[in-house]
Picture 1 (cartoon, rainbow, N blue to C red):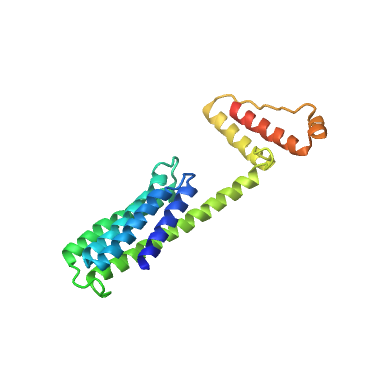
Picture 2: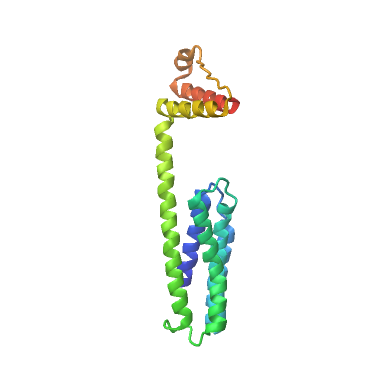
Length: 223
């Protein structure tokens, strides 16, 4: 049961991180790795081999965490939180391999069902601490995403996707300052949609909204 829960948690985390960074989650890879880990635990339970049971689950979870880090690696313009999240995923993933190998081979696993054994004490303590740090970074990252979205919404016109007056005035001040510092000219384009009322009257406001959105995207692409 614990193996299934661990695999499910790693699957959900990997999928969520991929979606956060605009990537298609690697559902198949995550599912196969989780299934391999749980299958290994079940097999080496009926064909008793405590060490292989530990290796099966730990290595599977470690691989799933490393797969979860892939979308962050390919993400451009990483900020501090992105780098921290990537570092924690890589560290947590690698530790499932290194920590397991070292504790099994150096510390020994006399009785893997003894929760007071060196293996389980090291595993439980390090996994709990690192997981709490990882969760904290994820929560902080989500909070920053919400803050960025709210700032963008406050400066953006929902219909056109262009800057509203507040965003426009802030951008103008920034651009003028950059132009003065860099000694380069800037231009302001004023434009209007002729006979736009006839579009709304003829085709309806829904089509009029689409025209505004299309025109805005075209202007942004051209500029």
